[in-house]
Image 1 (cartoon, rainbow, N blue to C red):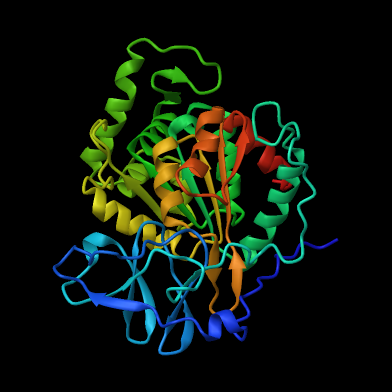
Image 2: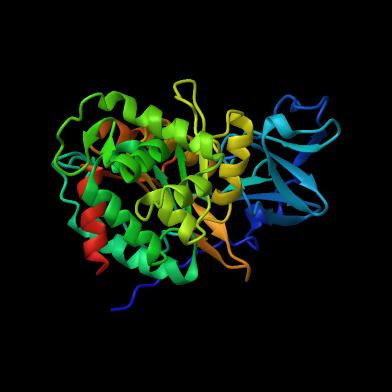
Length: 363
């Protein structure tokens, strides 16, 4: 049976409740970066706003931002990007009574929930069997390799293991990676592995510690900075393996967001968090599948940027698949606590996960 996306069911705006609903109220932003009192904050779900008698969908959304009516469409804007006079939509009700409707069941269709009020094993934990999740993920990735955009959000754990680096490199080479979002550490330890065959001084295959190995990541960063860029480093040191090398070879964009913990950092790491946020959102706004792996803070950040739907170029609305994979149940489930209700958690070692995923895709 071939894979197919779940059909989106838009609200029936011909019904009386929507026909008689008032237009959404708007008020100009009182100053740059400031929303008027009573502003509406966006969620992960499709949201419609009644403007001049017509219900308009916010086509590009992001949690915790505000809707602005501009040039006949709904623009979803970060608070810091508001300009004085922007027409910000007001309202805290989500049922249409204020001209705002949050559509939470667009992809459910006629599906019925047969769960009892009391039942065991309703959460996702280390005891959960994830075999069905893997099978679903194989289908989604094969579909979106050709019909969507797959973004990976990665912590440094992948760079610590030879097989995990190789598995992810195969995903890159075979078109399953359209963008990579990470920090200084992932790139640093991946380049250290390619340059010195270690990650934080430990051999990436045998796990043997090298004498003075704690210098290795610093030597790597210093050498990249000496070369002036990652591409120059790869060329001058004849690097031919790894995650960052694969991204450069196959022209996959990667965004490295800096943090206060960074060593060096590597030349492309962005120290301005808002510049990094903008670059991350540039990639996320067209994503159809997002996989967050072994990085709590980056996962939450990208989760806040990612709605549960995407309006495609032909005008159709499709589901966005969002996975959070981590050995910690806390991390895998935390996204739901932060509003990313469509995120699906998989509790496992991410190095084993990526190797299994690569093999399951036949790579």
